[in-house]
Length: 432
Image (tube, rainbow, N blue to C red; front, side, top):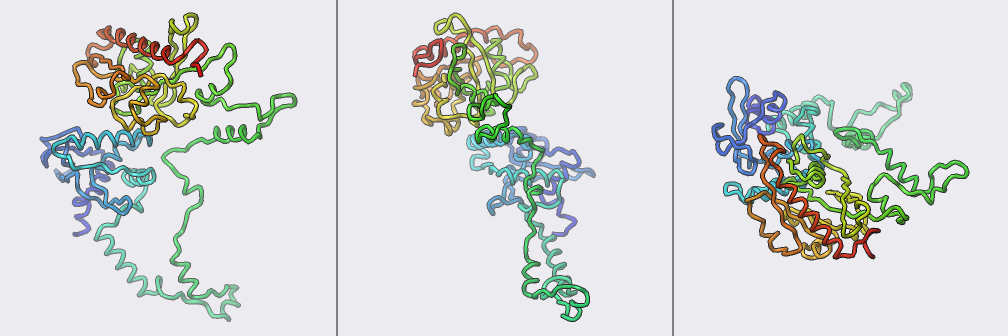
C-alpha cells in the first residue's frame, strides 16, 4: 500500500480527516448514501465524502489500528467513543450497555458488540482524532510508516548516530574537557530507557479540575481545621457540601430525616434529573433534552410535597439522585421509591441487587408512553412496581395538551405516600 493511498484506505485516517474538515460521515445500511440510517444499532456501513467527489465506504465491523488490551477495536466502537466524547464516564458506560442491547435485538447486527474503552484510551483516541496530538500509543502505525521507520533506523545505525556502542571519549580527552567517562554498556542501557513524564504531564485531562473541596473535607476529618479561639473544635465539625451527608447529623426538633427517591441513570429513561422536577412538581411531562426541562443533567434534586396522612402540617422534603457516588450504607433505610426502565443493570450497585427484594423495601415506579408495551421484566416484578403511562410529547402542541399528566403524577404521589406509611414513616422520619 502506497503512502499516498493510506488516508483513503484507512478508516481511522478518514475519520480524522472528516473531523478536521467538518465533513460528517454518513451512517448507512449499504455502501450507498441513499440508504442513510441515523441509528448506529441498525447501520452497517460508514461513508466518507471528501472534496473532489471522493467516496469511501467502510463496514462498521472493520478492525482499525486502534487497540484495546492488545485487541483491534472495530470502527463502530471508534465512532461511538467519538460521539460520546463529551459524556461523563457513567453516561458513557450506561449508553454503551443500551446500544449493545439494541445491537443484539437487530437482525443485521445481532452478533455485533461495541467495545467499551477505558477513560485513558478514550481520552487518547479523542485527542488524536481532534488533531490535538499526532501520536497515540494505542494506534499501530501503517505498514508504510513502519517500513519508513525501520529504514530510518537502519540508516541511523549505518551512520553511527544510533544503535551500537557509543563512542566514549578517552581518559586524556575527558580529563582535558571536564567530561566524565561512561561505561559503554551503561550508555546503551540509557538509550533504551523510556522517558516518563512528571505529575504535571501524567495528570492531564480534557479540562482542568478544581480539587480544593477535597482538601477542605480532608482537613475536617483529620482535625486540622483552623478555628478561632473560643470557636468549635475541629472534631465536632462535619462536612456540609453534600445534601445527603447533612442528614447524618442527629435530627433536632425542627429537622427530620429526608426520604430518598432513586432515578434510573439509563439514557432511555423518560424521567431523569433534567425533567423530574417539572414532572413531579408541575405535573407536566417534557422530554429530558427539551429546553423546557428546568433541572440539570446530573447532581441532586430536592422536591417538597405535602403528605397529609403522614404529616398534615408541613411538607416533606425528598432527595432525588441518579448516581450513588456519595451514598452511605445507612442511606438505604431512607430510600422510599426507585424509578426504573426495567433494565436490571441499574441495581448492580444497590444494596439489594435482586429486583423483588429491592421492591420489598421500596416502591418501584415504571413510567412509559401510552400505547407502548410494558417490558416483561417489569411485569414479572408484580405488585412491587407501580406502572404509569404518559402521552408522547407533541412538539407542535407543547405543554398545552398535557392535562392528563397531572392525574398520572397524583397517582404516583399517592402510591409513594401509601408505601411510606405502610413502612412506618411518620412526621419525624422513618421508624427505626
